[in-house]
Image (cartoon, rainbow, N blue to C red; front, side, top):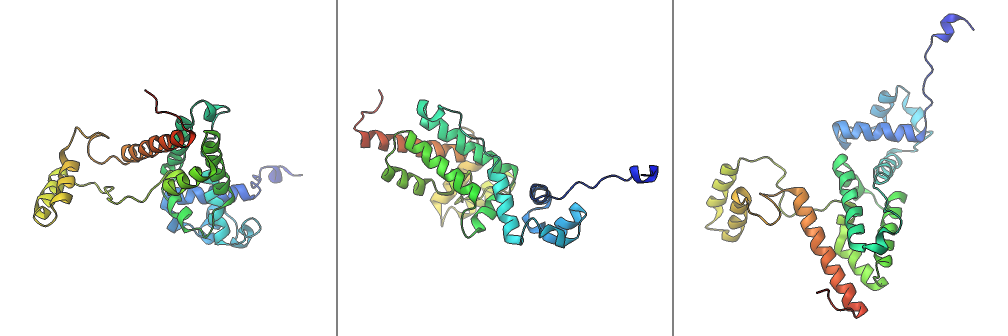
Length: 235
């Protein structure tokens, strides 16, 4: 082997995991709309056909990136559920939310899939198991899962979208303008603009609102579990 040959850098072998991690990185950088097989091939410095040895088509690629993101959700610690099911589920769901916030496109892709991916099924099965280990009947767990909906995976479709940055005074002026026709909605909008004493924090904080609703649900589930088990409420 000549000196010139030894100086040539060795190409990192292409693998399914490498393809999927590159796809996640692309989606994180530019949004899921920028992810295509051709763009991914350019990023990995290979011809597009090389990708199809690892992902058969775009749908399989999307399933794969979903599984990679869901795989980031921390698992509960051994014995955690038996000691405090409510705290354990809360930590699990907030871990899922952290994963969704780290990859803002992921929730949209999860909702777009025709059926849950293997990692999503594994995660949902785990959460069901947490409720069962916490003393919930099969029937009550069924209702719990329906009630939680996508919140189990760390995201929810909000009725009011406050993601846009709007000056509080501009928001307040808009609220006052709609007050004659929609007085109750205006009242909420004015509170969002000015209420620093909100029970969940100033204005509409997405994380605070998510945790507020999650805690309400978990408290309600515990009351139902106690009622079904014939237990009295704690003093």
